[in-house]
Each structure stands twice: as structure tokens, then as C-alpha cells.
Length: 231
Image (cartoon, rainbow, N blue to C red; front, top):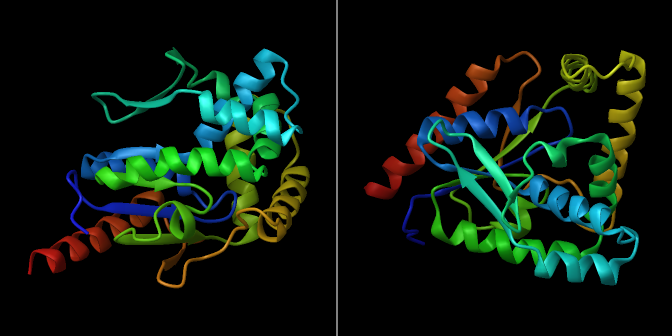
């Protein structure tokens, strides 16, 4: 399938595997649009909280997902701003309150169907690095490059803990470890869009790798794929 703007790279993996950081850097290196599908669920959750909509109500949340305009606006430095109905909510969607509401929001089948349609439209154009749950299996099953990032439970918890410390959130490593463990169980066993590796995805264990090493490896896989397509 020839896409107008280039190929599609789909990246997924458990919490703390480094997928967000890596996906952003890969997109910047390639000059592609970084598509954080999780940010779209957060956007719907934020709007629901502001409007007083019950995030547990699937019918209302699904309708909200359908009518909400979500735009991913790429900046000159490669970063991406998230706009909801024209308002920049890039920072607003990263609060703990929105994170919790987003976890509930993303479990609704109707919400996932609505946002998957928006994500598929982005994938059709190509030239994107898509990161998030089910991008390899549902959103872009025909992605030219699929990456599944993993790391040990301890390493993933350590990364999350450091990230939260840097954001000024006081929490113990042991608590983060337990949270990641519970998140793994929830993500892999839920009925809607469970965490799973696509059969044709390349698995990369990032436990003992630097971010640059992971990015280099993925970019190399992309270059190889692009070379094969030209032949």
C-alpha cells in the first residue's frame, strides 16, 4: 500500500517500556508526525471532566468521542501540541485526575471505535509514528514497521518513579512498582483492546539499552524497510 506521506511505524508495549519517549524521538529523526493515541483518549476524558459527564457512562462518553474535534499539531521543533475543539490542552491532559479518567474512558468500546476511526485516517496518509494500545493490531494492522518494546518490571517501575520525581510527585518506588504490576495485569486481561504483541512485530527489550540505542535500532529497521520497498 503506497501512502502519500511515507510509511507507518506502530509502537506499543507495557507501561514504562519507554514507548512514548522513543516514539517521539523516532518521529523527530524521520521528520514524521508523532501520533500519541493515548493523548486522544485523555482529550475525551478531559472534556468529560470539564462538562461534568460521567466517565463510567459508555453511551455518553462514546457520543462525546464522536463529536470532539482532536487535532495533533506538529511544531517546527518536531514536538506535537494537542488541540481539543481548537484549545491547546497539551499540558492539561497530563494531570493525575485526567489519567485516571482516561483509564476508564479507554475501556469503553464505543469510545475506542470512535477514536480508532480518527486514528485510521491519520495512518492512511502515512508519515506517522503511532504509539499506543492496539495500534499494531487494530488501528494500523498494515503498518510497514511494528515495534513492541519491553523491559523488566523493576526497570519499568524505576523509570516511572524517576519520571514522577522529576515532575514533583512524591511517591515511593515500592508503590510505583505495585502500580506498574497492577497496570500490567489490567492491560493484558481487559476485554477491550488488551495489551498484546502483533505476530509480525519486532520485540525489543530495552532493559539494558539507552534511549538513543533503541531509537537507532528502530530507525535502522525503518531504513531497511524503505530500501526493500524501493527495490
